[in-house]
Image (cartoon, rainbow, N blue to C red; front, side, top):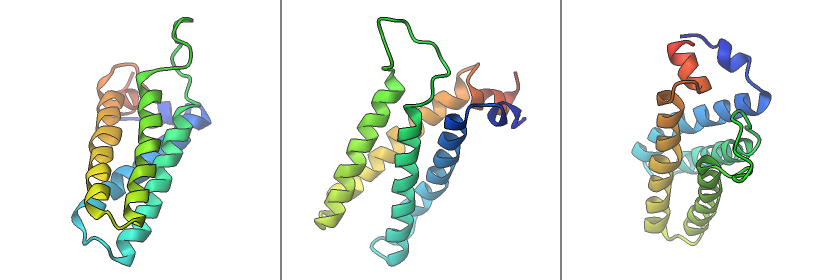
Length: 136
């Protein structure tokens, strides 16, 4: 294990990884700690901000050349857009006191917006986080 690939990565990737780390640490806490408390709301604000930062920074990660007919669209960028929309829906639901909808959306965000990309980041050889964990 070596942090060198991450430290040598572009700033957008470093920001992205930092934001994802915050979100990954807070996600299980948000799921298991009591809901509706001031702590839950404060941690939720930090978690949403971290995910927004992760999604926005994802648009600036251009570490893989894409075929000309594809352009800047990839499934990870589409997932970032869907995550931003889902965050909006979830926060709006919480503000309307539609807690069940808020809970459903937030859980889906944890599983799909954090889970799937994390698996891809660590399981695909050649990706920076794979190299951090397993070496070149």
